Image (tube, rainbow, N blue to C red; front, side, top):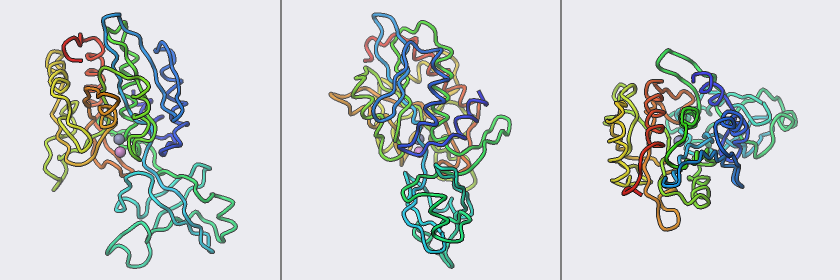
Length: 332
Ligand code: CO
Ligand code: ZN
């Protein structure tokens, strides 16, 4: 599983430009799904057929990561940029960016900018000495991502884009394990979550599922002087109660808790005060879809060094596998 995590987290995939990631995923799931298709927005949908009495369950994990886009190139060849998704300014200074075409640069700040740091006081140095030289290395409007390698610390793993490649890994590993599911499963690797849950919206409309489950990272409260939050690394799959995009359907929340207990899967309850997931878009599809989320506890979300615990990832895989088998009569 660690190899898959490394491959997917090191791939290039800012919102709207996810094909390097989805090409890898398609290769990984092909042998295990009954059908794999890609839609207009770039969502990859892997289908595993269930029995007649089963329901249609849509699982969603997003393939895109937060990034940057070049907005301006000055006379000396320095770049100015805007964010793609929720980039937090405090994680940028001194970090490196890799652009779609391969150029690599360092982000730095103007003099005195640290006092009130905003994106427009930051620039990217790609080693060019003139505007013309820079223009040969990157184009205006080119997207970039954090340039960071995967690190294995044993149980704990660090990488950029754990949000949400780790959710993709959970779905891939679950798909590998599931045989003859009761329910028909749509494993959707969604595009453009970080810019507004866009891929999940169209995918859910097309599938029209009976139940929707997002797999995504959530914050933790277990670091020094962290915000008050019960979720911690190593304590199991996080079953969402609510976030800013969704109040989890009580029946879905209770079902996930019941499945975790019955299968002795470590779990914890998650109340996320700010942030959302694809389930926020799925549950508002057509006449409404009962939806919930299984979250992977993650430290330093939206920084170049997001940390997860492999035991939590395993617990999330086990919970998805359990849900594939269960009788959903009376739930949805
Ligand atoms: Co995110
Ligand atoms: Zn995410």
